Amino acid sequence: MDEFTFIDTIKQNSYRQPSLVKGIGDDAAVFRQHTMDIVTAVDTFVEGIHFRKDTMSPYHVGYRALAANISDLAAMGAHPAFYLASIVIPRHWSSQEVQYIFQGMKRIATYYGMDLIGGDTVSGSELVLSITVMGYVAKEQVRYRSHAEAGDVVFVTGTLGDSQAGYHILTNSMEYKNAAYFIERHRTPTPRVAFATSIPGNIRVALNDVSDGIANEAAEIATASKVSIQLHDDVIPVHSSFSQFSQEDQQRWKYFGGEDFELIGTIAPKNWSILAALAKQLNLRITQIGKVFFEANQNYVYIQKGNRQSERLLKEGYNHLK
Ligand code: ADP
Ligand code: MG
Image (cartoon, rainbow, N blue to C red; front, side, top):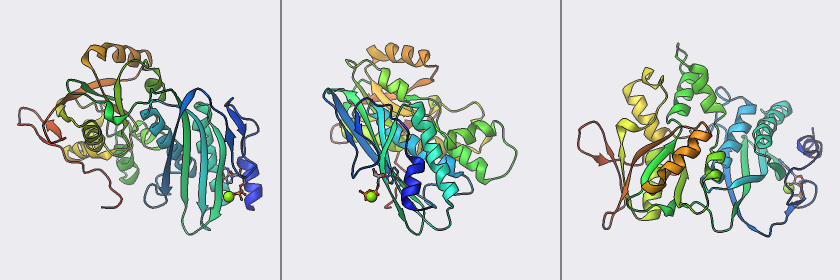
């Protein structure tokens, strides 16, 4: 299949977003916006680094790559609207497999009412998928990492470590409890868009999505907000079957595992009940896991385990240039 036939197959027949003026088919896409702030992000996924063909089908590669991008929009409090997909296709990927990647993206895009409005298609030596997303948020209501203040409570949605548990199950064949649940969390994660976009605009929250693990995401909030954060190990939410994995794996996955695409954030204690009510309406678990406080000249994350003294939680998440 040549490049142009291929583009025809992935092109939407119609678009959902009212602001779209021109989608696929010219040198660039066009959309028009008067009233909202536009939020945009790009993420790149490389075969062998971000996914492996033996644990992710092409459909899941597409689904999860777009889910990760949508999660970035959620962490800004934005409504997803558009995506552009740039793909490097190697010889060892069939055109059918590439179609499945786009089907995976289309599946989650449809759920969020997003339109595919452009991209690029080239050949190369390994599969690389780079997705750009765009979303909207009401003017000046973006949720920054720098919004945390001393006295805030720290919260996290859902349960942590599930994605890494799923990956472990896929790569270590044994009998596991709730294997399907963990595998699904790994392959088709749910970005917390509904939750993030329903927080009333006049309420201050700091938000960050859990892509690298909460040790890293909490540190990013602490640094951006110039505060320190105290977390409590015994309240970090995990799935009821998480205890089947070794203590060491549990600890590593819940702090450094990442890719759960949950949200970690902070909010003033007086507004906690609003957040808790919202989460309940959405049937989403939300847990207070710590507190924000001020320390002169340093912005650290601490973890308290059992009745041991609090210690610093270092960011040991995946760092590509390390
Ligand atoms: P140009 O040569 O102007 O860059 P292309 O031939 O690369 O144009 O692309 C033609 C149209 O198809 C453009 O609208 C482009 O955004 C879109 N397109 C190309 N590749 C993809 C892709 N992988 N996903 C979505 N749209 C794509
Ligand atoms: Mg091009």
